[in-house]
Each structure stands twice: as structure tokens, then as C-alpha cells.
Image (cartoon, rainbow, N blue to C red; front, side, top):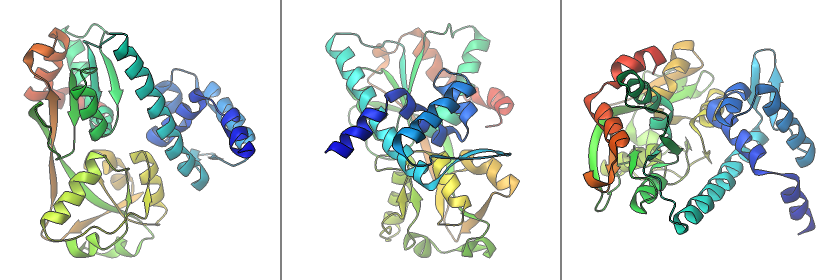
Length: 314
């Protein structure tokens, strides 16, 4: 217990949020922006956290900074702690009656690769005045936030039922099999769905839309997915592990397109199968959406993201 108390006392939520953001974004500078601080401040927080925990979290080099193996695992745990703290704050705000009429919850793929384009389209149309708040979470958590009324509008990537919530398809996404260049599958033109199902993958946590989509597709074809080799909280962390050659992963093409083009990851075709999924908006009913959220939903449905997303490279 004393050792556990020492670790708890040595950490703080902001540092854990920075560590989690590094896994999600892939760099200290981007993590600093995501948590509202400079790169120098984020770097110093990580140095202090490493000293306090007594383990190396980051591998620093001339080409940038990456998570160590210990850092990737610690980032997964940090993400859970930060998410739990956010749930606590959200719950307390709800108990105070402090709902969020302009709050959006989005699954991580949507939040990272599509939502920025939609928000830029809102700005271009003059309907975004900066009063929208966004919570990024896995699809299961997004559904919880919309169902409990704290976030009137959500975007999910999982195929799971949504209960009484209204759903609207806003985009379609393809999940692709990727491996590192040193992996045995890197030289293959394709693998069978059965071989993929029988192979332990690097995946997101239970509740992730990407994971649910892949596992459901395998089950529909009569295959039982093998237990994951490793569960990680962010796509960036998964890409890092896959690039090392440790194991394959199935991820959104939006997340790995640049890595494939740069040769960091290799796409392997799955014979006679494509993982195509719908990305959906969820909400309790038209009456719950204020003008800003209605405008955001309209832009997502119309596909205005295409013209803006091109400039974002998504």
C-alpha cells in the first residue's frame, strides 16, 4: 500500500493528461496543444513524471519523441484515470443541473479526422462562434453521454444498437489491416479472414468502435476473434507498436493513410472481405439540438467536410 500511495502522490491529472495526449497525437508538441500548454511545459512535465515514477516514459531522439514500451502501457492506464476524472466532473455538473446545450461527444476517429473539417466548415458559413465544446471518447462512452443528456449530439463509429436514440449516417469509413515492415505478413499480397481472426491483434479497449466493427464482422462470417495481444487507448499508440513489427492491427484508413504512404506501415489485403462501416450521428431528437448543433449535424450529413477536409489532409 505504501508503494501504491507513493505512486499516486507522485502523479497529477494534468501530467497524466499530457502522457495520454502524447499517445493519442504522437508528439509532445501536439500533446501540448491538446492540453493547452507549450511544448516546453509539456516536456518538463514528462521529465518530472519520469523522475517521480522511476521509469522511462519517452524515447527522445533527433527525429522526435516516441513512447517507450513502458510509456505506452502507462499511457493506457493514464487515459483511464483521466477519463474517470472527466466522468466524475461531468456527473457532478449534471447533478448541479449544468447541462451542456452546445456539447458534442465524438468517437476518437471522428474527433481527430473528421470533426475539425466540419468545424472549419461551420466557421466558413458563419455558424460557429466558438461556443461548442467537444468531448472525445470511445463509441460506448459517447452513447452514454448522449443518453444521459449531458451531450445532446454525439458521433460514433461502432455498429452497436443505440436504443431509442435517433441515428443518422454521416460518412462511411474503411478499416484496413496493417503490419510493420518487419512483420511476416509484410511480404504477402493478402491473408484470409480466418487467419486474421486467429491472430492476436493490437487493438483499442472494449467499447472502441473500431474494435467492435472488426470483431462483429469476423463473427458474422463465423470466426471467433483471438484474444488481443495488447490493448492500447489510442490509435497513435497502436500505430507505434505495429510499426515495430510486434503484431498486426486493423485501423481506419483515415488514421494510417500517411503511414502507409511513408512506408512506416504496410497494408495487407484481406481476401474476399472489406471492413466498411458507417459513422453515425446520435441524438435524442430534433428538439434537443440547438442552432449550433443542428448546423454541425447538417454540415456532417451534407458532406461539406469534403471541401474542408482536403485542406486538413484527412
